[in-house]
Length: 403
Image (cartoon, rainbow, N blue to C red; front, side):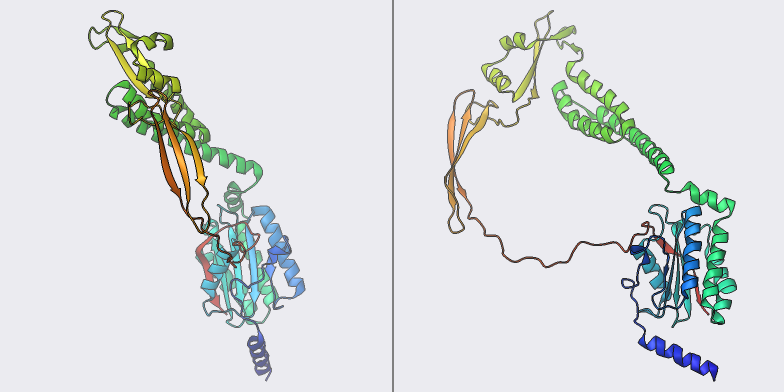
């Protein structure tokens, strides 16, 4: 008769219990950083809940492992295992990057328990160890209806596994203490930097090997690669070693010794004043506006000369349609009739060549202004994480069963 009454009361509680989804399971961490037990249906006593919080808190302080205990009457699915996996990852149990979290999920109406472990605990708490804790420690107490003792003994068994000298050594090697975090950061930083240095050195070798043509062409082709490598070196200092070599090589391509193609003697790079006598008026105008920079090499032995154009510092000039000099520029842009939401507008652009003084005006149409829509999106706020746990992940390890 007593069993019938117990079954009847359990059935009534189950009938009226609210089935929890992953999103609606209360996350105690949002209200209490020293709490680890979610017990919304009062299945565990207040005393047991307090003892569990203290035991799990000591375990976290000693090993940095994050443990959550969730005890509910019913959930919105028959698959307790999948629910535990999704809840674990929704909350992000365990330290980010270390995945040293553990979840014990208890669903009363299914008489089911699942121990879910993060990636970082699968070696210390393999599936077999979790299965033994359930079947040999927790389930015998649960079958007698003593849920408090079952959980207290279960967490104690977990702590015994994780607080051995070997286990603590492995766990604390991955601790997120500031000192160890800085060591890990710099070791990873140097490792990535050295790998990038090797990779970029290999790429530089093949890039330099493929360069062809006159030195101004080679100088222009390698320039973007030098800039990208410099940018990489700003973030990864080991790459700066290669940057220094590259900048020196880039400089030598343009300013290194230049043998005369006629007599083989070394040619001389003329100064800005000296080179004007060897440049056309068009080239001088391009140099004046800084759209092109010319290097003039002269052989003092046979008077052979070589004129090489390089990209200048002024990028607003284009090639003049009349004289061909890169001295053609937009001088003014006047809106003669502003556009409205009903009519198009008009404008005039004036271009001038600073070499031959060629002028050109170009009329253009300004599109109708499109009125902004008055409708507003009613979307909700930004995505929020499951809670204030460490951001760890689970790969589905652990064990489960029914009692």
